Image 1: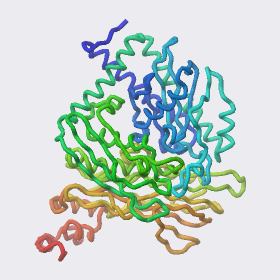
Image 2 (image 1 turned 180 degrees about the vertical axis):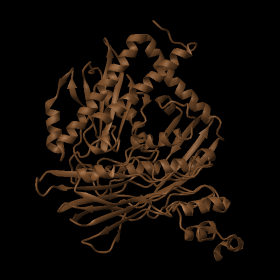
Image 3 (image 1 turned 60 degrees about the vertical axis):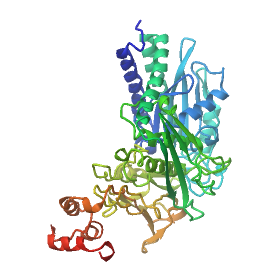
Image 4 (image 1 turned 90 degrees about the horizontal axis):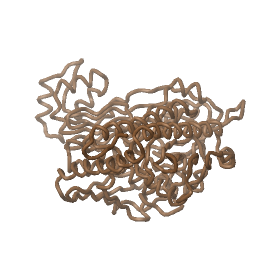
Length: 578
């Protein structure tokens, strides 16, 4: 039997790679077996492996924002089932006030036993297309309490010692609009948890439980050690940053997120004191999700060799006052909490840019915008729920431009293909394009956002829009300009487009056209330092217009060429004269 110790780096590396491979295999299994487009195609799910104490060992390359919340979820599970976990058990829950995030995200845990010894858990989180509540998709921004948002499940056994709990399945089936898809995705989670269990036990059978348990402890210590080594290189001090959400759907007043990051040797303290009190709308976020967003932002600035495990979290303390919208009192609504998570990431990265400026990009589009249409087919009276998550752009980096039309790093998700949408839902996609001039100008420019335009073909539907970065545009860094803001537009019955608020729930009818213009990414560095040939190349590629080049770069482009004389004259003018 192999032995592992501090002097056996080869066995350590083999086991590390094996565990990381298992969670990626789990992720592929979800994708291949899920029923709903939001899981199967958009990839709104996560897989991970935990030890018996609920500490994360490895995370798949899935939705990064999910996984930092798992330790709090595990804490709730272990408190409820202490001494009552057995081989063949499967536990599910989704309650945000019991360690969850928002109700559509259903957690599933399968305890893994080697003989009588409890080794850990395989874990799968899927965003389900509907969990009941007042609107299709269960994800409205304008709910006012969690009771409106859908079915709440505390930690409970879906399987008990291998015996299926049909009552739980029936409760779920009776409370959701699309039971076939929801139950199908639950079955995908079950299959994935079983695969994780099987593959982990293969490793333990090969190396033995004592060796594997020693590896688990060493692996977490390794994650902590590498994290502390990185933080120790940062200058001590306190660094502040404030970003904003453009209202909660009821009150248009900006909602501040303030963070103070204190570096003390090899330790970080992250404090959100000064952030907005909890709000009426559903952009409140439980603390577990705020922790997840914070861990993610910090992880983005660390060396790529730092493993994504709970060892990293030991070097970071996170606090948010109870009663603020980042740690609300029950029963505050939290369905749209993803938007808040994206902005927490932006805020923490804004503070980190003052500590490690070359490791932080300017703000991206602000997280995906959500367009949800739900209703009933007029012929079959069967319900439909379309949840489209529109990915945007990355902000510019210290040495490279931002990337156009790509998933936000917080998400790591995909777009929904046009062909799939039109064959599945009663809609027609009339435009899907890059949004010219949406980038923030800079020495490195931000990425371009996208435009999606939908025509409703059903007789009627409930429309939900969740967007942001209307008033508070994606910020630039170190002299870079902010990106263009996002916009929601609606054409009713063939009329002209009218501008909507960023967060909307309303009825629409056949022939109505919904258009979303996603924000771009912020710029990095002084725009006047951008090489003129790169400005021209962007114009020739259609990414910016000559008018944009003139306004933001003071470059005059005529007939596909730079007018060098006019450009020199323009650049000699004072900025207020341009």
